[in-house]
Length: 282
Image (cartoon, rainbow, N blue to C red; front, side, top):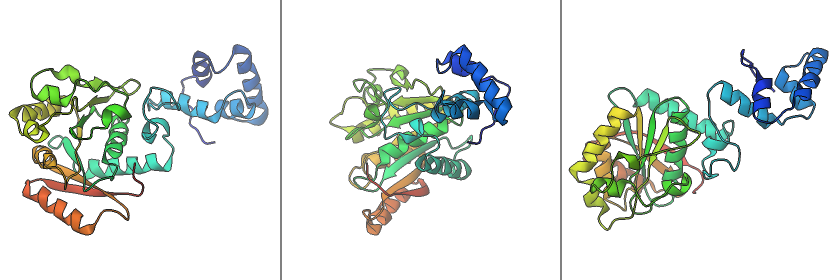
């Protein structure tokens, strides 16, 4: 197990977390001296803590928040919240890096994620991507602009009664944006109650005003959208953000559908920043 231990005391953090007792520290330090191990390595070797405990403490030291399984009430589908060393999470971080290079800067702060058709797992991708952006200490807000089949309130265990739909008609204010516990730089605006006229709501001036407010107060704004080819709402969102990330499903999304979605986005005078090919539906 490779680890870098800065000046902060891992033993003290493990004590504070209730993972060790004072007499455990003496045993660990003795093992360190005898075998030339790092503190965390010695603690794991003696069976006093699990490697997962050490990784959690290191995450605290380096201000890289993530959760233990079952903690926080967040869906297990959000692997970036629970498994920072998993291959899927590494893929989300790689996507984040590409988006930082290709799109996000002081002028470009907002991006719509657009699933070409049904089942591309756009919502799960958007949520995981929002988490890894927030772990980069980027003030990140995820907007559930899918007011037909919303999912973000389920993924983040949020109250669905107040959200985007209420905000757009003036029934609530920016307090509808929810801070996510354990992730200091992450906020989510759920979709709210499902309205009968989502396309008309997203075409209101209030949506443009909301986007301006978010651009001033957040470094990164990600928007989850309905299935692109099935719902015209998505074009309203893409036209406002000016950019889209296409999401497709391996062995399911048709090339003809992807090309049709590309044409719609271009007609909205927006830029396609890139495309993601999901291997599994969610």
